Length: 140
Image (cartoon, rainbow, N blue to C red; front, side):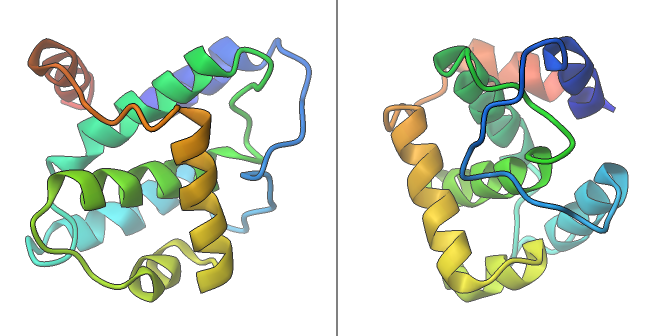
């Protein structure tokens, strides 16, 4: 899986506390499958959101070089990136409570995660078509 490869690349960095840290009882593959399950219905999460979310994950890592991607923060970081991508790219989206429930966090925590990712990528949400295509190809 693409995210596991990123974790391995970044695991040599020392762990720095982030707003995304937490303990997930669900394996990363199962968590992604849960998010993808909601992507099967175009009314909830469009499958096209995942390449954008991965772009945001790597953008976050590039703009925050002191923060590694770890098994402690990958779930919440991915969730925050998915929600931000939905809100940026989709015309319609659900209330934050829905995405918090899907991701297994409380609404207040979802709000904090969303605000943290936006701040930590300096609100840079535009993605060039070539960049999007690169992440889309990595997910195939």
